[in-house]
Image (cartoon, rainbow, N blue to C red; front, side, top):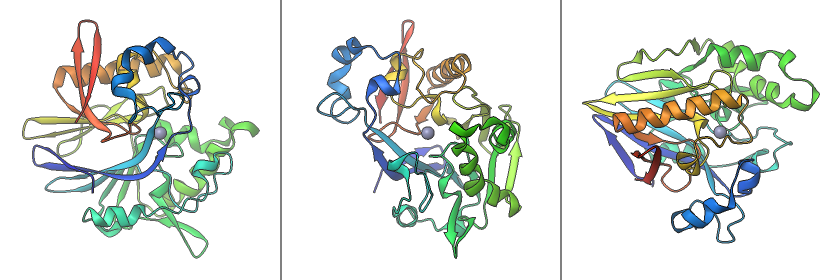
Length: 294
Ligand SMILES: [Zn+2]
């Protein structure tokens, strides 16, 4: 069982789905500099980079937040049975994700909000599950929250010529069914409070309408940053975009905004893809930042 974090009166638990170890650092980060490895390998290997130092280690998971009022999931990982032939590691998964959620004390019926930072393949999959050949919402009592800019972009087949049509397939099997079920709340994130203690911030770039989720309780703070960063090396090299970032300049600006927020507000950071505990703190050292898992 993963550890339970406390932020004021809220508790936060990671619900793991997969570990990925197939990306080389040069692939994930086109600006990768081998000198970075020499300086940082004492903490990178073996949890964040494999023993051969040729592959980065990443996690796909969901964060479960329990406040006094709400049971919230941040993102829903890849999902089972999804046809993802272009990415064999994610194709037709069969993981015990819902059993892991149950082991944390939560059944699908108990979830009342699902907040999606963005609508990429590894963030929306458990929105739905296959029931008698039909994709149905996995969380029958939940409101699914995502941004208008994401919804507009990924619902428009015009944005997906042949080579990129897969993103429209993801939208069809994992997002459209919750809209058709009347369970979607499509929002314009502006930093104001969305639920008590929960605020949605625009952090576009990795995807057109990505949101970060801020949590405040009893004077303590946390931030869930979506894919603003894919690996802790970006705390030290915020100018490095991942190969998946769709608008490179906006992605850099959003990453800088998140790092400033974490350092200035002493907020706990809950990442989407860091390995290990996937959570930690950012501090400022001169003009740069430092990461520590906790
Ligand atoms: Zn992701």
